[in-house]
Length: 374
Image (cartoon, rainbow, N blue to C red; front, side, top):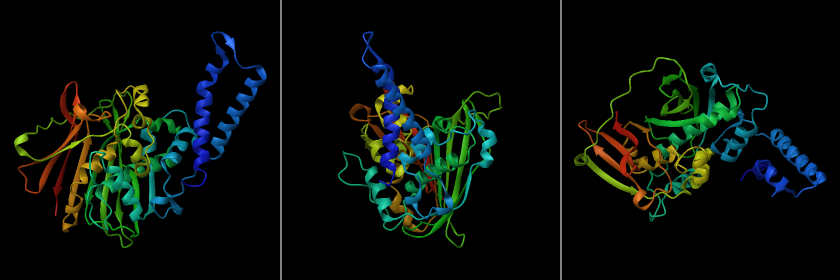
């Protein structure tokens, strides 16, 4: 853990605990349990903690970033969400902010320890070992996850509105194109930017990403993410695409996933995503879900772990997964998820589906494809 993170987390935790418990400390069965002096001291401590939390907000400076180690951790991102925007606008005008959301020439170096932590977090309790990855390579799933993490960083740095609005963005899809396999320990750079908003029925899709290049400008990986910001609007929306059907006679691979409710905790260090809907069943229910749900980046990375070694054949690949139904946790026993790969009529192209239970039947939770493009 980095210097100052213990203080940051303690401040956040203590502030929230004191604030939430203040009312319950005042009365029990109508009888005061705190004197006026005790209550005054408690309020002073609470205010001091809030002030210190605002004063110790971590800074985001892309010019000093040299590796994944320099990106904000999930604790620092949580700190930025809660206390990082005291003087920014309260109203969220996402459309006006899209052109501002960009980071130029961000240096990226991924070390083997980052890949090891990532790989360990993909291993399920029912599995004897972690997935077999391509030796010396940065995994495709890792790059997709970094796209989402860098997206958080870019938005936190660039938007002019209160950061709590960003907690309402729901990851809808990850798309990665591999031109050349990037290597662990090598120097790369990436520019992050957003496309214009695409309005949909429930709000608008925020689409962002960038291309990983070496110092000569040679492209290695292009990563793109799609996040839904829900709000009402009267914009014209495109007609929905027809739902794709999947026939089990075309299924060439089936893997059962038993995912525990604590799996998102193991994913935090890699994802940097502290969204409370992932952290605990109770937090998920507070936000209107049946339970906590698994990170979309973990689902993407887990699906890709079965194909990482194939990426070393010298070809170019395009992979995309869209998240259409959440994986409620724990996904175990009768509620386990099932990952399936289907052959298609196009040589070198495969469909991928993560099936999840919903109302007593298995439905597509995540749907995507992988195809060789060169």
